[in-house]
Length: 324
Image: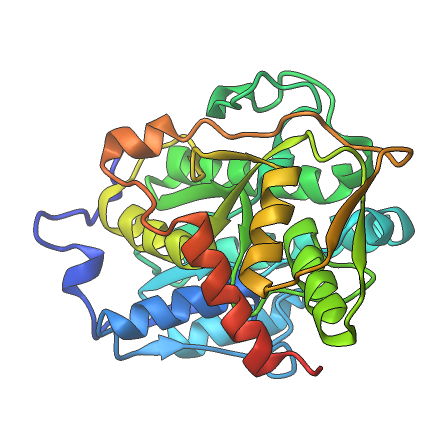
């Protein structure tokens, strides 16, 4: 493993809780969990900026920010994200804005003396027909899923940029690729949310309205992997503390669940007593999508939050925070 020029022993992330840590994207699902985790651990000097205060896609603004603030650590959790429909409608935004955000932040961070940076991507970087479970070395071995290739290409460029800066400058930039995430601060919007929050909202609304049944697309047979965002936040701290390798690291739960099992669990957690009906005339999507997270496990990190426990926590947040 290549270390940076200032990787002295005892000079670790967790030993510098008064150092400035810039968490980019602190209002999102991922960033908000990371901020909470760092505060819980006693970090006292978090640097946070809303999009209105700092547009990370504007190079001169990002440059001015780093020159003025000079953070010691950076976690890059800011991105333009969206579902299939958004990616199909705004492909230019997904490639350009994500490339701008990560290029501006990574380059300015390096030039203004940041000690370590963690770049977060997503499991959509892998080829459409990657082996299952997907190991890190499946990257760039085949064509991408066409529906989100604009976003994926930007994220792959981010991984490669971190690697290039490590090779050329000996700078400690690392990348983590999380699986499907869920938890507090997720998007529960009826039109453009992911499968787990969408199910939770639908079962909740059915319970409130006294509906007899909830109809879900497909057969329920596809296998998916879900990681609670608080587990990801824990893994982020672990990687900042322990990992300084060239390769990116998958961050998954390693546990698969069928969409049917997921729907039944969400139904139970929400307390919907009606019927769950499968509309098998509708498409199922990819039969299996699981990441191989054995590299992270071998470094010494495994997730702690069970799906049931995580769903209960998420539903509690939904009840308290989502307008009914």
